[in-house]
Structures are given as structure tokens and as C-alpha cells.
Length: 79
Image 1 (cartoon, rainbow, N blue to C red):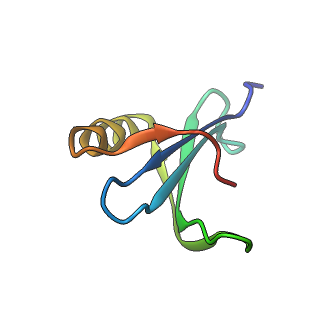
Image 2: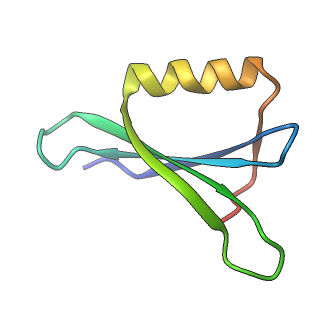
């Protein structure tokens, strides 16, 4: 079993946050999946979570690099 990995990206324009959580697929040994949750931090409240998708390794790496190319920055954990 692998250790769960979590990272966050923040949009430069509207401060939208993406949370990336990589985990081992319980249905197939050795298969890694990454859950991406889109949300917004609201001061003094719980984050507003807008959507959730699960990607395979290639898809999530493509998404990560595309967003960084558009100015998204890796940030500390937001939730």
C-alpha cells in the first residue's frame, strides 16, 4: 500500500483551489488514481467544494502541467 499524497494548486485570477489526492485504486493492485476536488476557500467557514473527478496518472500529469503553464501556483494545504 502506498502513502496517500496531497497537493494544492491555486488559480491566479479568482483564487479557485484544486486539491489533488493520489491513492491506490482498491479495485486493481498497483493502479494509482488521483482525485481532483475544485473548491473555494471562504474565510471563517468550511471550503465551498464545487466538483470532484478521478483521473489516471497520465491525465492528471497533463492537467497539472497545463494549469501551471497558465499561471496556477502550488500552495500549502487549504483544507
